[in-house]
Image 1 (cartoon, rainbow, N blue to C red):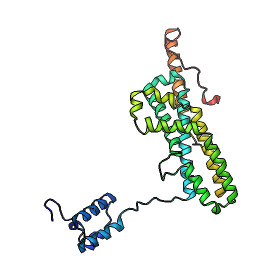
Image 2 (cartoon, rainbow, N blue to C red):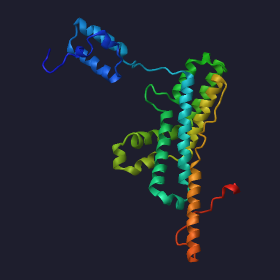
Image 3 (spheres, one colour):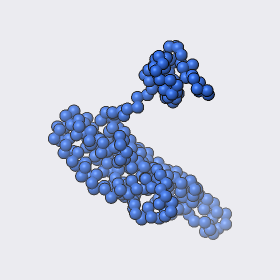
Length: 282
């Protein structure tokens, strides 16, 4: 045995040792050591085969159509929720946001970036990824298994979906460019010229809302044909940030009222744009 190289069989020389489950990383390391240590010995082949049986299956899983639909719905729901928060904060009263500029500024930026990431994931071009396009390909492959639609209806739904996607082409290009050059990766071109990406990959809140809306319709069209159900692809409570903003606005008004009552003149600091209604006025 080469000096400095321990016998990997020492850690698994008996059937009782082999029968104990190892973490996947440990199994891979031991498997590699066994191959290096000595091919051709009976002990190595016996122990290696036992370990191989316990290694995780590295082949691509094949999710069901139900699982694909659920996964894509979740992506749309969360992407729209982050977009809703970003839209709300972008239009919020500056006086309210100034109470915690860093917090609200970072929350707005994070919500914008995460919503773009969810949009990018829905149409990811990575091989093997679950995407809207892979869902449509699966629909054509398994068209005869749909419970509430004929193969012809499934084919028509796919054709309609592809037309919707074609209408999103410019938005998807901007989303992918932003994802690849600034959000998921820091591209040297973006570092050298930060303004170029914003100019070359223009994207608005309306664009993202259109992307999520059209994607939701595609998913629901397939869902109706698959098991005769559709979903409201929206996260309940995604606008509850308004309660926090209203409470801050109310506190700012109360602060101004106290100052004016004490000094009998208009307060020198700005009030929120409007006083939020009290709960009994709603």
